[in-house]
Image 1: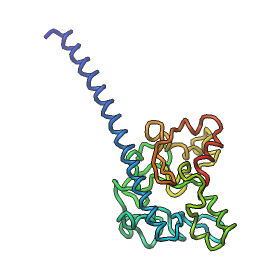
Image 2: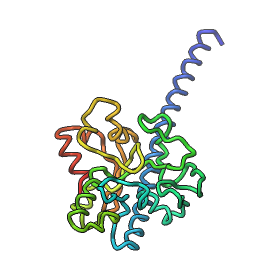
Image 3: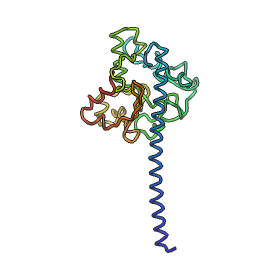
Length: 243
């Protein structure tokens, strides 16, 4: 074989290898998105079981008597769901999962396989005691405090019921997130160009420009980042993340 033919064969092989690698990466991303959606469906079932045993209340974290959010006062949302998923949890700190004073590993239902070291803002590095890739909306949890104060002071430690959610098929219960516990999807978090303020929107690019969302009626679907930032961002955020 001449040198020219050899170089040609090498170039063709390199091109084919590049195409194959690109296809494998695409398949991997699709697989991660499918697993993520499966995780959220399992969390939906666990949520239903929790509500059935807790008078219909959702497993929101609590507000203290001063109205401030506390993750350890009555437990983080994922801490409450862990028993329904056969996942151990710390009894000494109600924001941690795994064996007592131990760390939990990937894979697990609380961890999106696409959430890792390379993700901007709050990278999830295993093993960890808080392996959470999902979160309820900060808007909804904030509204939980306000509604509870209006309706019943004792409800401060209970959160919202499903009946407090308008249009359950259109409102997000859990979604891809880069920070444990709260998504805090205020308007400024979506409109600011400052990277320090952008972590609320980062997960909505996790799966090829979308983020997986578990709605209150139990269905899961990808929500495109563009669908939130196009047009009236504040209205789009309110439509998805407020009760």
